[in-house]
Length: 135
Image (cartoon, one colour):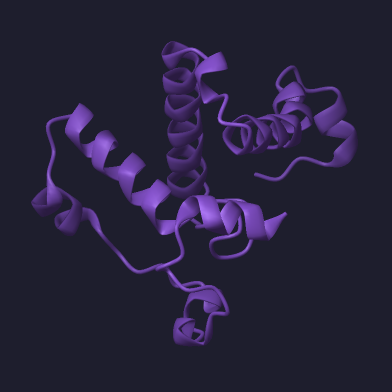
């Protein structure tokens, strides 16, 4: 279900849409300045849990998929960051690669059918190098 701009302004949860860009900006700055420790573990866990819960509810409930990561390709997250988080998410629920393989599905979106080998950014670039060159 898509809400009109007017409906969003009157929605009690519209603050989420307003805060999300600021959260992205703050996370970039904290990581770039090596200050992620300024955010508590509990706050990070709550944000990740909320984001996962909303993504699944939207994609399953609305019977559609959408890009779960902001930005283009690895402009916001590098493969190391993503795989590190996925590994810890699986470990937190005592799951492993086998369970992931059972649930894995390819998204039908057209943007994933393009040739990723033509990417200008190599997956071998470290996260720190990638972050400094992206700015």
